[in-house]
Amino acid sequence: MIFLCLHRFTSGKYVMISAMTERRIMQAIEDQIPDLYRYARFLEATPDRADDLLQDCLERGVSRLDRFQSGTDLRAWLITIMHNLFIDRARRRQRRGFHVPVEDWLVDFHQPPNQIDRLRLKDLDRALAALKPRDRWILHLVVIEGKRYHDVARELNIAVGTVKSGLSRARRVLARAA
Image (cartoon, helix red, strand yellow):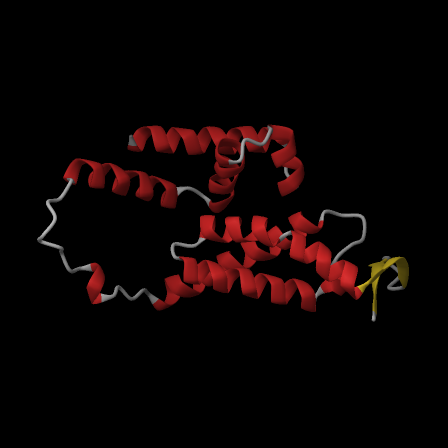
């Protein structure tokens, strides 16, 4: 099977830009899975939800390959799909409310609490959760993955100044929490 990557002009006509075999497209998508999973774990609180987000992202990406523009960054396109799915899910969860399992409220009385460390981690967790997803992702790419500003800007399709200001905002929020 051959997928044709089409580009639509304002006249409504489609012009073939390039053709790729299904195997090459699937391999290109498969090569992105580690980065996509890392981003899903960054966005979602639990591994199960990250797995679901990754699966939905891959499903949507494969089902909408006709919308991918040849010559553009496949990784950035898939990350955009994942980001949009995450935002949709977050809005849906916010409308529905959330469920906290009883096990999360149970206390283990056999182990003495390390309250200072726990409070610091909670403060940091709250500060990270308060960040906008894009600022969190910028922080992750620059601090954790060690990418340069212009690489992050190109990957997220934003200006370098936006990367710098997002990183500055994220660091300021985390500094206040420390």
